[in-house]
Image (cartoon, rainbow, N blue to C red; front, side):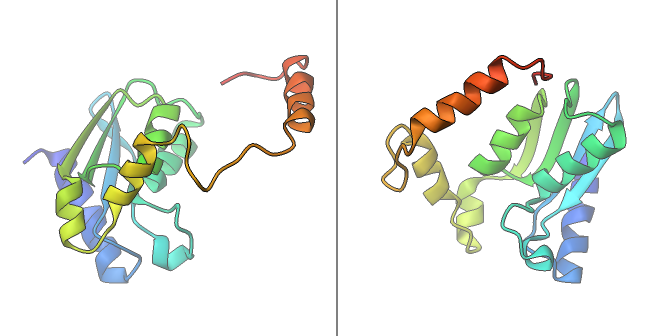
Length: 151
């Protein structure tokens, strides 16, 4: 077992012992060194976005002083859900190593498959609709005309 997956497992076990959330731990590695780590804290923080990967991304970004994790790799105990995958892509993480897959997470009571189904059909999800687009387009135009940093 790689030492990085071992560290992700340690994170997951710590979260379980402390009652923070599910068995999901993660580390982010750059140039052979762990630069961020996290475990699921959904129950602790009462926040459904506090998955292990998201916590590790936040930790790595804070420690490195950047929102761009180009050149980093991510080790996680389970296949990232669509939310975490989105965060991984936004952070520019180059490679993901995961232990358990979505079938494995389903067997222990997590409903990742539902989110993958929505992800795959996101062009027309029934719970979303366009609303007050003109006002929002003005916001986008104002931003586009500004000299704000793009990321």
